[in-house]
Length: 413
Image (cartoon, rainbow, N blue to C red; front, side, top):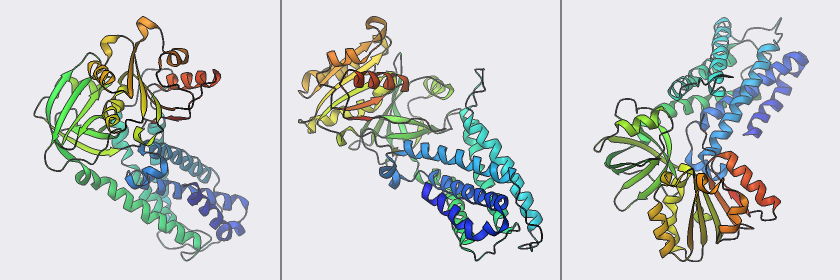
């Protein structure tokens, strides 16, 4: 991604360096910004075939966010450093319109970038609602088109046959096509499921549904985007798949009622309702890890492990110890199921840790209780980032550094 942006920089040298340092810098910044925006439009299509390269859709979205920040900064440079085209012939009579399109595109992107980057107003508890962020984010494609018009028809020190112009037009096509794909993808990729069971646990809502027609393609450890036809549940949200049974085309989610959507789902979703799922995505796949693994789940982070623990039956040489850290035992999800597997599978052990009773789970307790020595083992984590950072740091300080640390960056905005 960075290489594609840098190519625009290098192509700007022969195209605009003769105009002076300030004008060239402005054009170079605009060109790189445009390529970054086009790449962002492409990443927004959720290309599953690139998940292996990036390490999962979560990493793709992380790159998407970083590219967005870079594009905004570069665009600001172009806006502040005004290019001097005095005496140059206009590329066409559309120059004035192109200037207006560029201004609209610039201000629109600044506003949308602000909504994307600022989740909570400073020093307040006021958050930008998810549905506002998502709906406004869709307009980025329209502003991208306006900026493409600006770059093509505004006056400039190179004509349309210059390598830089050709390069930018290629990315204009990539960006526009990608934007169209993101608008039609929901009608193609989503699969219909009917809710067959709902269980309201103290800390989570267990939702099971069966495919109506063709099911999604998912494996243990994947997540899917979920929405419902029921009022208030129309915005797709990502949830990890707790269980997936291809034989019966059924799927289960364990959803913690944290925000408006998840609380509304808990209160209003009913058996028989239709869900629309898109997925599966992700690379949180423990079967690809080493033979010795320590799994640590914080709260509802137990979900991806529920989906994958059954796979240990087919891999008797793989040894795993799972820790589930909760505030109190009543918050445990599928405790009996996991304890039953721990008793029946010789290569799987399970520890439920209640912090109210036993204090905060730390590296020392993990080392003491784990049937799999953490040192050199794969460490798979799903839960609060602060918890992961603290435990991994203490494991390293104690001389018990894990071989690999695997986790998902479950942050899509």
